[in-house]
Length: 285
Ligand code: C2E
Ligand code: MG
Ligand code: MG
Ligand code: MG
Image 1: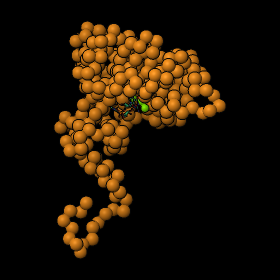
Image 2: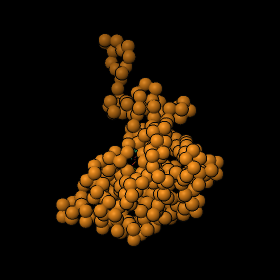
Image 3: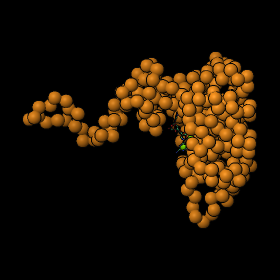
Image 4: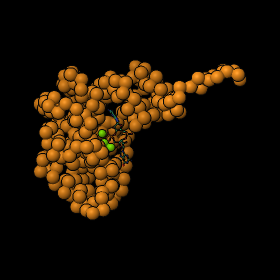
């Protein structure tokens, strides 16, 4: 708002400066120094194995504690961070923080703990990304089999040959690779076969919106079977009810995350969940 503009003066608004774009601009301005000011924090959402309901790991999810706006959701600022390139530095912090904390949890509980970290296309496109992951593993001492990177379908459609060779390099580090939000993009299982993917994370909408010709159960079951034939484990995201959980289990889906099972939580809340659980198994099948 043009503050102090006199009664007879015109205010200058760019025609496209809608409320939404003003908020976006304000967020962008405060996003730049947020990392240096220590405003980010990771929360963790438990991932459960459906056969025995055991905790198998957790997904690290960034939280931004904005000094004036309070908690800003990643849905609001991750896109801005991606467009501005800030995601490269933020993502580097997320990876180091997640691996550091997970390694400490392992030491505390005396058993392996697995963590999944979201990686955006822009990070993956950095030539030094593989080295960065290698360095973080070395620096934190997190066993590579305890780390999984979640990539979006959009990260896999750019330069197929280059991306495939890069993912093979990441696999050589011994880590696991997942495709996040599967079902929201354009890719198919046939397409994903080109990449060394261990885990498919089914977007919440994939399970909830199926067409009426085929029953949801038959569809999910066929999909899970196909993924297994390609040696991929299937994780369902956003499970909010016991009915959906039962359906997924009956369809032999491997693992799930969702509010019905556990919400994303602070590190100290996670400690009690790990404490109460048995020894987590490996993340992948
Ligand atoms: P995502 O990776 O698909 O993460 C799952 C999102 O679904 C999380 O939202 C989680 O809180 C939410 N969720 C979990 N269970 C349920 C449920 O039962 N119902 C519903 N409706 N939602 C559920 P969140 O934490 O707001 O994150 C949103 C997105 O922001 C993430 O989606 C991911 O794409 C991105 N994001 C979060 N943290 C990071 C990060 O560190 N780096 C990058 N590059 N992206 C991140
Ligand atoms: Mg994710
Ligand atoms: Mg997801
Ligand atoms: Mg999702």
